[in-house]
Amino acid sequence: QVQPVESGGGSVQAGGSLRLSCAASGYTTSRYCLAWFRQAPGKEREGVAGIDSEGSFTTYADSVKGRFTISQDNAKNTLYLQMNSLKPEDTAMYYCAKMWVGNCYSGSWASFSPPSTYWGQGTQVTVSS
Image (cartoon, rainbow, N blue to C red; front, side, top):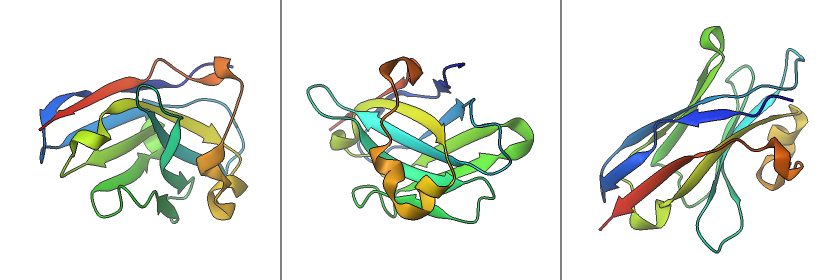
């Protein structure tokens, strides 16, 4: 199992934007679910957004709806997260994951809990007020 590789994080002021990228491996089936997660210090990892392999279905946590956009480029095997109107509470380490396509449609993507060795290094997002 090759761990996902996330990039694009950084430090911005509130109201700013960042675009995260991810190369996620695993699930070699033609259909799958891709998702972004984040974990702030002292908090549980939480699901941020998910997208199916066709790009026809997207889902977001309530806290980021209207501000974040998940997308993917199949030709480049890359997942993106465009983050606009960033808030200090968005500060966290961001991770991506690839899983069974049914997880997207059932809503269980947000509670995806693989072995700890699955997760990549993540990319840090820091938003200052």
